Image 1 (cartoon, rainbow, N blue to C red):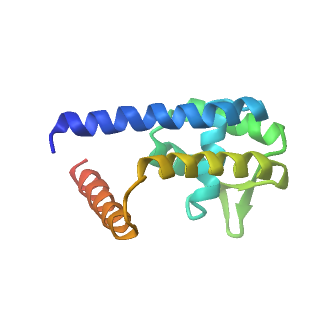
Image 2 (image 1 turned 135 degrees about the vertical axis):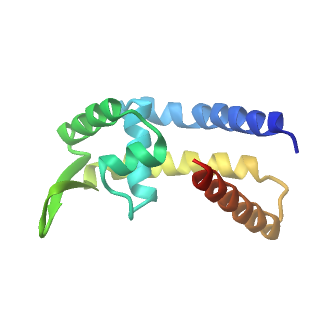
Length: 142
């Protein structure tokens, strides 16, 4: 495997994901950033703050802040403090976000299905383990 293969994988995956998620964004009147935030929160319940989104997704603070504010305004998200901590706002999905989240997750499944077409379950598991190790190595290197 060459570094150029990794760049191609990233570029093509991003393009395929965009093709699948954009119609969902349009159907629900959401920006791509807003949809990404909803899906991040739905798929990663342990990471529920704006800071988590910025750090894990590498989005800018200002874009996350503006998108979270709009999602709150639309009734898709609510911010809440946890007992004993009035500093950190934890984000929670509201019931109104469910249809958009379900549609977004279906688009994500379509992408994974296309990516792993022809792979056995064992190959998929090995790939997942390998990707997790690569991500861990990169985080350590950073």
